Amino acid sequence: MNRTVSILGVSFSKLTLNETILHLTEQIGSRSDRLFHLITTNPEMKEK
Image 1: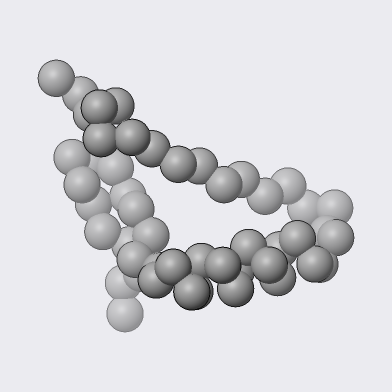
Image 2 (image 1 turned 90 degrees about the vertical axis):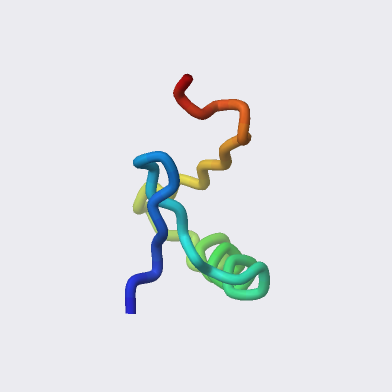
């Protein structure tokens, strides 16, 4: 199952809010040395 959707050529996660919260909680709790990025976007950032 594809867990992303492409909107105007940009891939976005299809995680639900609860899945996102769980994933972020696990990432924060792991205290891993591995770099983790959380990126948000705004509709007005689309290419014109």
